[in-house]
Length: 258
Length: 365
Image (cartoon, rainbow over all chains, first blue to last red; front, side, top):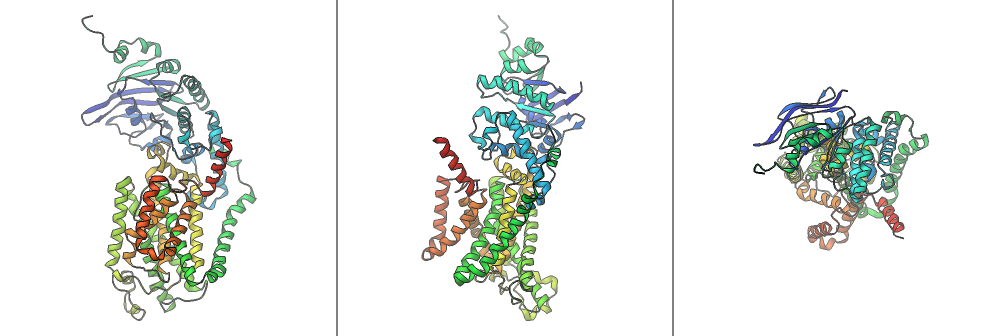
């Protein structure tokens, strides 16, 4: 199996603080890969590095055969690596439909002049965007609310909308930053099915940050564990679960005197 | 799933829809402008016409500023500076250019005569120059956010005013031949203003440009390019993560906005009773335009039009209290920020608001 995403020895320091050091990860094509670790381990920093929000001090990031280092976030998104955010970032005042339509922008070909004169090509493209956006909304059960403002959606629906928006860009790699945070148990169960379903349907490779261990262990085929900015374990869920370093990171070291 | 291009092939709009989209606005614009020029204008008399002209120019200014402050969410407070650049460019074209072409600096030709076409051309020249400056200013400054961008645009507006104040006196018609052509753009009147410019501005041209501006803004907003602007206003980081090249798009919106401000400048400078002085186009003018946008709704085209209309008529109605106008404006703004910070209509158009209310009413029943 080839690698959808290959990260090699990536580091970043903020002043004297080494937020992430020598982080390496191989996301195999079509896998669901979990990235876990205690709070402040640097998981979101890794996402920011991958998506170009931060530039790595050293190390390389390759999406397929393409180098991602030095690219801007919008270029990385267009290249096929798209993310969602831990603290939901929707276009709140815009409608649910618009949120998804906006993400289609980078895939469109007609220019502003065509939009002003409403050329047939432009209007056809607009119709195509709307059709595709509605299909995505339908998958995420958001179609009945397409005209509502995104900020008025319930929390779980906002999370789903964020994933729908990410998928509108036709990504190869999807980075999900705590998609289940704030969801109730029923929503979490539905989310599991949804993540699996979109992975099959869109041929995605997914990198998932999540604190809900039940969810991670259930759906991920591979897990990387991060602590203090360093990878302490990498492997299959069952192996990672038994790894003493991981147990130590989460529960603390056993007392020497005991 | 099928790609966008594949989908688009099967979704070509019908011929009748296309015809309506392309011919409709043209017919409507020509009908409106001719109606205003030949029926409404004579009916409301001289002072009424003046108010209508001011109103039209304010609509162009407010709707154009809305593209930056409303759609894109970048707070610019130097719009009058772009208006000045466009106005002076247009003035140079009609005054000096008019002399070179027609041998006189007075208005030439009747309705749609040669002079009028030169005037229309001068407004377009103003738009191009102003748009170019908008691009230049936007390139470095749109990397800044919020207050910092506001300060840069404020500074830009003031610099334009100061530079124009330093220009040379207007060359009278009798002396134009003696001055080399390349020096003429320097002689635009200094602090006393660029006069006497030929008074070409009439209802036809003003409202033609109003139609173009409004159509531009509305169609932009309704297209995927406009939605890209709106997404920047909503959340820049998410926009960038959704594949939108934020900085280039911001700069482009800024240039569009500046270009239409340039048109408004051209219209304003050739208006009987207007004061084409640098001092008239300073911060206060920018502020007046901002108030229209904020009041009408950041991002609402119809809202800004309504606000521009109301804020043009109001001072005329309250003429006795004209000294207190800015006080009333400021109070209105404070009140607005407290009660409805998103403006009267927010991001919505007037008709969308009605639809929402009906939907809500139906839902509650």
